[in-house]
Length: 287
Image 1: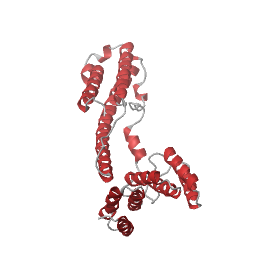
Image 2: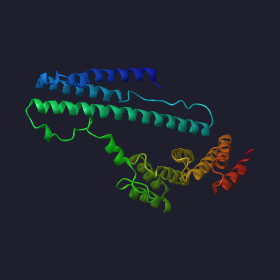
Image 3: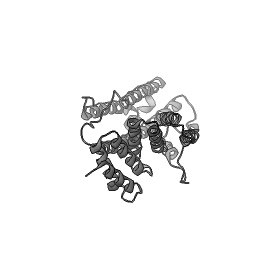
Image 4: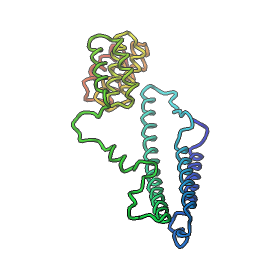
């Protein structure tokens, strides 16, 4: 992780927000008392220009400045998976806080732009009653985004992109036909083309099956791990963890294999995969 501290980053963003607040101060209620009518058209246009510059500066504050690393060295495979899950929860909470803060900035900025538009029309002698709704700061109303992001009525089927189900079915058909190499390639392309797909965990699992059929045990183990870590509560998770443990055993990583197989019963005691995990542990001579 970069040496720049989170506190320093927050200080920089706070500085940008303060600059924006100062730039907008002239358009606040205090400026409207007596002095607003005295503003010229050029003054108001200048305020809009300053506002635009400050918004662009804030956008740059939201841009990444380099790679971010998560310390996952050491510990067992399952411990690293747990660390990944904890880091994901932390980043999700931080993202939600930043989203709420941006929404407040958008709302305040939109109101101020609306006030500037009103005064601009008034100075030009236009009809202020014909003013439409103010364009949202940034071009998108966060409320519209929330409406658009609202899930459709649950009919039991995941929401997929155009062609997503077709490409997945094509890869699965290749696997069922015994074309392991082609299936592994098609699943790899699917995962690249549709990152974050609801079918990603299933695609990773089936890709692991195809790689196992090719004798590529190491990459199969990675695929099973991706399937499990991508959706640890999904329907494929117990079987993915089982296949990961078996693959580790085939790679002669007996200690890791035993720990992984033991996790199947701990995490999914009601799963049918538990019996297979116990049998695999016996075959490996796990304690």
